[in-house]
Every structure is written in C-alpha cells, then in structure tokens.
Image 1: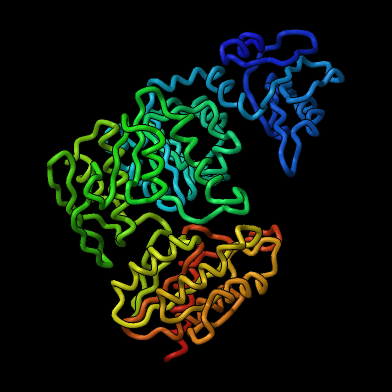
Image 2 (image 1 turned 180 degrees about the vertical axis):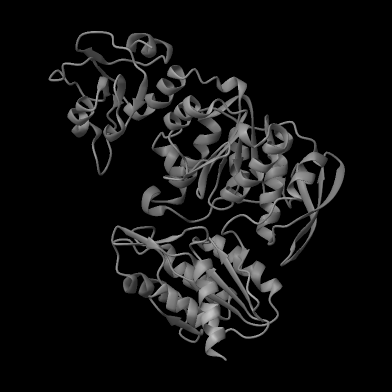
Length: 491
C-alpha cells in the first residue's frame, strides 16, 4: 500500500511532512533492528531508548519512510511528523493488514489479580466454539496465536504486533487478552476496541509506576471509558470497592456485575473448596446453577464468576459456559500443587502483591491440617512500599516463613529482605535466606505430615533476574529436586 493512502485510511493526523515520493509500504516496525525493505519505521520516544536515535539504522535496514514526533529534514526518505508516535501504531497496522475488528470478538481483562486465570478460562470457552486455531490469547505467561505459542515480552502486546500476526497466521474469530495498566497508560493498546472489558479487582501494586492508587485506578478505568466498542459490555466485580466505584462512574447500561453481593447479576451463593477443586452454586437471571471446577481456592470462585459473566456477554449459554469450565485444568503457576509423594503439600503461586498473598494463604490455610509455611520475597526495582505489607500478611496468615529473593534485578537481595522483615513481628517464626533454592530447601526440610509449603511470587516464571541477567530458575522444578535430595538424605 502506498504511504499516502495508508495514512489516509488510518486517519492519521499529520503535523508536518517532508521528503520526496510516495513509497510502497509492506510492513511497519517500531524496532529498527527488525526493519525490512519497503517498511515504515515509527520512532517511538521512551524513557531508556529514543526511537529517533535509531532512524539511521532503520534507513540502513531498508525503511522506505519514517514517522516521528520530530521533524527530520536531514532524512532523504519521506518522513511524517505526528503528535504521538505510539498512538498511530495500531491504526496504521489495522489499515495495512485490513484487520476488521467488527468481525472479531475481542475481550480484555484488567485488574491487579486474576487476569491470567480469567484469560485462560475464556480462551478455553472460545475454543469450544471456534476451535483452537481461531482463538488468540495474550497474557503474562505467554501468547497463543491459534496453536502457535510465543514467549510473552509484555503482559499486553502492542496493537501493531497483533495486527501484524494476522499477516502470518490469518484472522482469528476471538481474541482474549490481559490488559495491564502500563499498556493503557503507554498506549500499547491504542487502535484496539473491545467487545467486553472485565474488571477483576484493584489492590496495591505498581505504585513505583503509578505513584498512588488513584492514578492506578484511573489507568485501569481507561479500558472501560476509551476502548469499549459501541454497545460493548463492562463486566465488573461488584464486591471490589474500586469496581463498585467504576460501575457508578460509567453508568448502568452495558454492565454485568458479578460477586457474592446480593445485587450482583452473576451471584455465587455457596462454594466448597478442596485440593481437588471447587464446587460452586451461583445464580443468574433467576436461574440457579451448580458446577464443579478443577481450580481450587476462594479467589478462583471470583475468577470463574468473571468468566461466566463475560461468557454471557459474548452470547454463550450458562450451561455451555459451566460445561467448559468444569473441564479446565489448573492454570500454570496459579495455586498449582507440585506433584510429590510427600506427607506434606507444596504449592506454587504467582502471588506477588499483598492481596494475592492473602488469597493464596487463606485458601491454603483452609486446606491444611497443621502448619502453613510460606517462602516468598519481593521483586527489585518495583514498588517498595508493599514489601513490609507483604511481610505482615505472611505473619498474619502463615505459621512460619522463609524470606528470600524474587527477581532482585539491580537491587541487593539483602536490602529487599530487610524491608520485608520490617513488617514481620520479631516473635513470628521466620528466617531470611537470600538464596531462593536454599530457602525452598529450608522450608521443605522443616515441613512435616499435614503441613503445607506455599512458594509464592514466581509461579509460571522460569528465571531469576539478577543485575539484568536472567538465569533459569523454576520453583516447581526446584521443589521436585529438593524433595528427591531430602528423600535420599533420609535413607
């Protein structure tokens, strides 16, 4: 497609243009290293790297035109100046690859906790109707483009990348994606529109980026006020105070609420949790439904209810939804019990916020006959204010703790641990062990019959990030290895 035609179809607001010609555009990139012949390079400004600094590299790699927030008269190629370079990415991609959003069901999930589980449940629901090849799912763990799986570079991919994948993999019938607060503030999803937007909850996290809870809320709210299609549906956890506020601020039409509250549209009445799963009784539109899920934990009652509400919004019957959800297995790294032939249980979970840790420990507590031991840490270069809070949570809900490293990044693990320890009472049983493997060993070696060891913070992750270098580390693998070593040592 010719550059001028592309700009016109995408309805790009042009501040200034320069250079001669109207080249053919076959691809679009914001990473100069990926630029190919006859492609358009979009120079996006950033905190660490400024896309304008790589224009020469893009030209060398074959770019036919440049888009930037600055003027570039020194460039011989056609260049276009716009107000916001990142915001035009999605619109240009949608125009170039003729991605018709009106023919596709797009569902976005936002909130502090539960996004990954809800996204995976919805993926299974849509696959039951459209087949695996026609459903895309993007989230924290990985990206599923039909049957193709890619490592997730961010929780939420750039809209431009989603549109480009249609060139290689065809057009999906449904797209489910986790929508992070970062992606909303940084305009990663600009150019997308959602049929359904889901609010799971809002609790403290990412305050290193958003500064305060009001800003964090405002970022999440954007999904509902700026990105819903006309006639779209907001699915909101009415038990969450921020969710209740959201409902009051966006109006009553086009909303399905869920929760334990009597006024919830999808209201769960009873539940029973075990290590094997959860039994739920819920009511919608005057009809009571009973079903069983393989997911365990009270917080998953919320995740399942959110999925049911979203499924209803997408035209699935209540029975159809429950039949699918009954067959979905454990989500990777979410309240996942490690398969050990041990007299105690070992559970791995991604919980890395105070609220998520409360949910996991409360669930484990109800299923544990004796002591509850928690191995946990806090990520470096992230919200420091939650560190002592998480220490306090573990002291309140567990019987013993081992405080350790969890992706310290550029910070010293010992410093992070000190800040966590400031929230743990001195008389609460706990040990600081910076080496995560040794911390897991210490917890498991102290566990006895009927105990439970919760290893929190990493879940699905298979690495430790230390000083910018990622080395392989999988909590589940380590737990299995440690158990085998301990078993041999007892012979």
